[in-house]
Image (cartoon, rainbow, N blue to C red; front, side, top):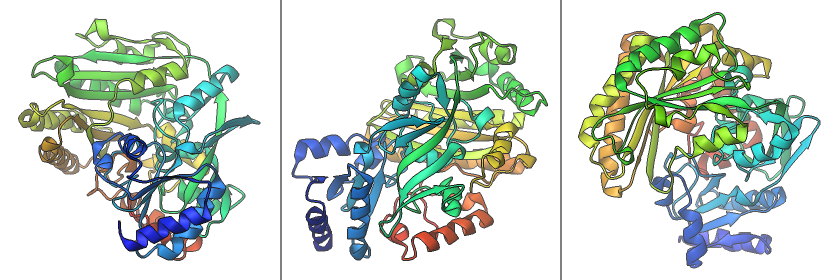
Length: 482
C-alpha cells in the first residue's frame, strides 16, 4: 500500500468512525468480498481497502475526504459487480466503494425507489404482490447500477425502451459531496447524462423507476441445432421489419458451446423468448418456439411471473470464474447475422479444449419501437436513432475455469469480433454503437455514442465535477477526456 493511500484510508476512518472498512488483514471477509465478482478478472485486482457505505451521507463524506488525495489515490465503484470489464468495479491498490449495504425498496404513486445495493430479483419480488412490473434486468442477480446508467435491456424493452430511459430520478452524490436529485425538473442535464454516462459523473445511491401493471408472461428457452440457424435469422429479421411488429416480444437468439452440456464438439442454438402477456404460444412467437428439430426435453416455455422468468435467466449463467464480454451492433440483415454465427463457430474450434469453456454468440434486438420510446421518455446519450431502423447487438461471451487459458480465449473472442465487424462493415450493415456493459477494454463505448453526445457528457462533467475527480481518481470503465 502506498503512503498516500494509507493516509487517505486513515482520514476516511477518522471522518467516518462508525463506517465499515475491510482491509486485507481481515482475511476471511476481504476474500469473500473480493472474490464475489462475476469475473475473476475483477477479483484479480486487490484493493487496499473495501469501503461499504451504509447511507448516502457516508458516500458524501467519502468523496469530500478523498478529493485532496485524488492525484495519488484511486477508487472504484461497485454495485453488484456483474460487469466483467477488467477494472470497471475494482481497483488495484486503491479503495473500492462497495454499495451492497445501501438497501431499501419503496413504492409510492407508481414510482419504485430502489437503493443502489439492491438486485433486480429483490425489486421483482417486492413488486409482485402489487401486480406491478418495472423495466429492469433480465436476471435476478444483476445489480441496479450498470444496467440503469449504460442502457440495458429488459423483457419489456420493445414496449418501454432501455432500462435507463425508465429512471425518472437519480439520487446522486457528485464530486463535491453534494447530494443531488437528477430528473426532468431538477438538474435535467445531469439526468440525461446519467442515462448512458456510467461512472463518470458521481456515485448514484438511489434509482427511482416508473412502474406499470404486469401480469404473468409466456417465457422460457428453446434449444435446437445449427442447421436451423439461418432460418431463425430470417424469421427474426422479418419480425423486426414488420409494420405490425409486436411490442410485447423480447428475443435473444444464440449459438453456444458448453463442455458441461456433454454435446461433444457440437454447438447448440438457444432461443430465449419472452412475450410479456399471459398468452400461451402466441402466433408471433411460433417460428421461434416451434423451430425443428429441437431438444424438446429442454423446452421450458410456459406462463410464469416476472420473478420466475428472471430467475430462470439467472440460472443460465455462471460466476466466480474467468469471464469476458465483447460486442458490436449491426442492422437487421439476414446474411450479416447468419455469417456472424458462422465466423464465431470457425474461430471457436482451436479453443474448445479450454477448461470449463462455456461461450456464445448472442443476438439481442433493439426494435424500432424501443428506440422511438427513448425520446418519449425524455431521451438519453446513447445516440441510437429510430430512423435508421432496428439495431441488433451481437454479444460474444465466454466463461472458462483456468487463468492459464486467458490469452487463448481472449484471442479467440477478439479475432472473431474483428471478423464479424469487418463482415458487417463490408456489407454496409455496421452500426457504430457499442454497448458499455458488454464492452471489452479496447472498445471505446463512450465514443460510439457520437460526438454530440460525448460533448453533452463532457459539459455535464465540467459542471458537476469541475476538477475531474471521476476522470482521474476513478479510472474504471470508459472516461470522457481520454
